[in-house]
Length: 146
Image (cartoon, rainbow, N blue to C red; front, side, top):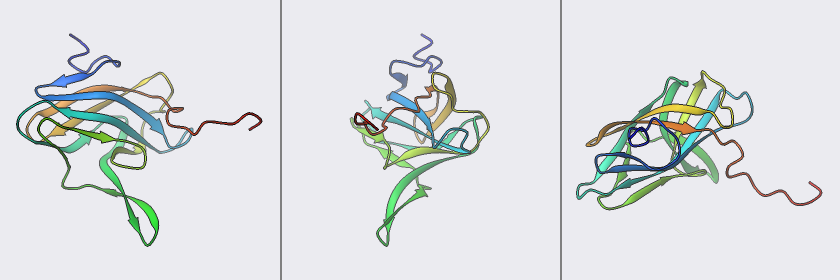
């Protein structure tokens, strides 16, 4: 029951037709003032929804971001209109793409600990989850001798 309410990390987290799959947080570097949260958002419903905001006591500012190319340079930008999650579909927030950006981090993002996060959807409303911190996730593989 606690996992369904998003109070325990691990399995999928449900809110109505919205399911949060495999969320994790990363610091941009040890002790950094910024971090990011990634996950897949699945909408099992028959009506499209939209992630319109996110909030967390772990950061002074929490925004929904994406990466865009400007003059050959990739830059992060806030997605003010939110991110659509199609009916019967999934939208993945991943490194180098859409993500939840934590700015002015107020707690260290320590491996194995969790970050409280509230996702705000246009239709499903607020979904409260505990996001596990995994700073090694998504790092390039190191070759022998490096």
